[in-house]
Image: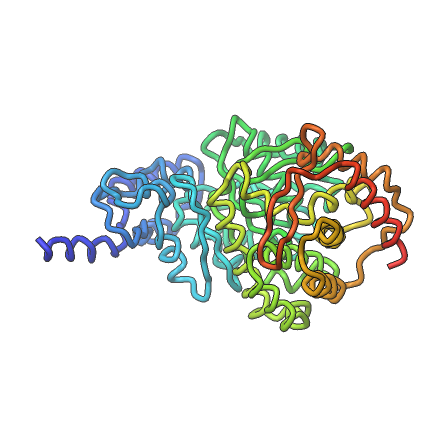
Length: 468
């Protein structure tokens, strides 16, 4: 008996190659769609479903339906006979990336909707290989902005066309103020022009605005289609691309229209970060710092010791912080997908940060810069409540100021900030939920914040910080 179990385990570690019948059906489908299939048969013959490290007795092969929706790996964890149904496919995504060294992986574990986060240099050039192994069989509708596409579009196109043929592209404006209904309609129209249906999928190439907007379009078009995030900014790679929060802004506030719609995969190419302006890189680093502040003092220490290397776009330093921050976010989202409680700690610095963005029309601050001011406000307010010892507070404030010189708060009306904060999703029942720090590397959610005290503090904070 022991021998048969060992043999079954060894067999489970081998990739399951598509059967001849499935290959023929797949090729016929592509041919009927008018896709150039020269060389496709040989490429397809080696397409494999890389199995879990956990033995799966189902003997399941990659089906045509799985090829169409990219769910092949995600659904294996719930197959009959799989001993680890609850957590999707631990180890499977590492095997997908195994032929793409030095790509590293982490995973958002949400049962049958689990998905990988790939981090590494040169992922864009090898994108189609990873996507094919994940089960995607047709060209996506790409959503991007002109600036990003000028930098990375050629690499993306070459990779996609090698496997899928031409992919239609929809462009939206660059910047937070374009994360609106008008841009969303533009994406819908692009999907319709491309003939998209429920078997189609979206690929978001860009920063947080592109990812949020493309994800929301995918969540709502024909009641939901898959999407893949290919974030090209540090902020998006460590924050907005992971977790399934998608949406758009209204002039009254940020992300007031949105949904939870998890991507099928996140592919973070460290090489794209070298094209970022220094201000954009620094803005993203504040989100990395936030991850350390709420969960990992070790990450804070790494940033303190390697700040110059990170801001100089050192590949090894960037890969380290992106991977660590991605792991933190993936773990938090895995434990609380719908933000019932624990996931709220990811909002550290965002209560005041979002209000500052809205009060200035999304024009003065990069998102990470507003979060930096929000973190400083949270430190000050927490100190008033007796949280976070002075030494730790000063350490965090020094590091925030070391990253870059932040846009000033000069001329911002405390009243407008307060009004924007009142429309925030974290303001409920006359009380404000706020994330505060008892110590560095740990966070707690406070539901007992007195609005009058916070309003007084906020006024003093803005006025006293206006000359910084």
